[in-house]
Image 1 (tube, rainbow, N blue to C red):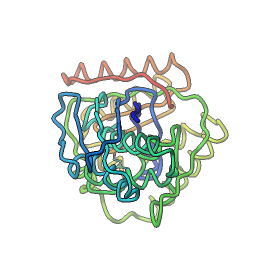
Image 2 (image 1 turned 60 degrees about the vertical axis):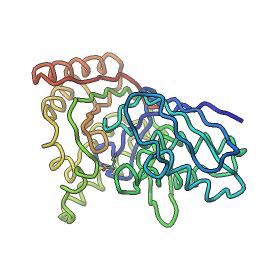
Image 3 (image 1 turned 135 degrees about the vertical axis):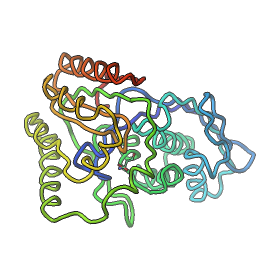
Image 4 (image 1 turned 90 degrees about the vertical axis):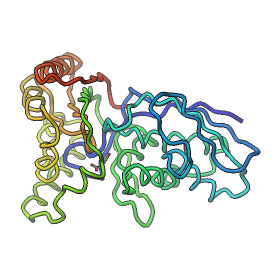
Length: 298
Ligand code: HSE
């Protein structure tokens, strides 16, 4: 009655799909071990040095597990040991990975009784603890894998898994702090109609480009006229990374979730290497410590 889960990092938004698109990464991931306990409630053990809360209502995995236990009242308790390898605050779905891994693990211990859509719903309670908002664009790909579209989260999550061609993902995490809650507060609450038209044109075309394995269409659709102009100001090096990566042959990219990580998609591994070099050079010049991940959609 114990299980080990690898919960993946994820990229939310995918440039034009704010709160509705996301994909899972092959690396990095969190390692989580869960077991059922006779002792009631949720017990969290953090097996790392990030100093995250262990009080279940304040811990993303804990909040998600508590929501799940409410739906399985005959289960006494669960213990989860978390070894985070996705840095908290990096913008690649660190909190979502903990929430998603926890509910996937507990579901396995309970014989798989809940659907993936139900697991997304439980995990959203964890995301709420982290950012104050119950968005699912990191959680859904962490649970389903690959690329997902979240058509709606109410009344229940409506998740559409999308087929996609092979894509190389290069992520850079500059060592600055951007809190999701802050990065949401600065957004305009009204969108001019012409921007909305441009944005849903891009979202529709990006989905079509993924399904049709049309790399050129994917590249043209990686454009965000609503969120990126506001948030990119918070991230030093944004323009250099974006323009340099395009010049190096990347299809496109932008802010991962609410940042500070930036991601770029490439059709070949050689291009992804060149993009990594652009990222490295940019942050070395800016004197900013950073981590780079070379990976693929998983
Ligand atoms: N869609 C969310 C946002 C993701 O951009 O605020 C946060 O990780």
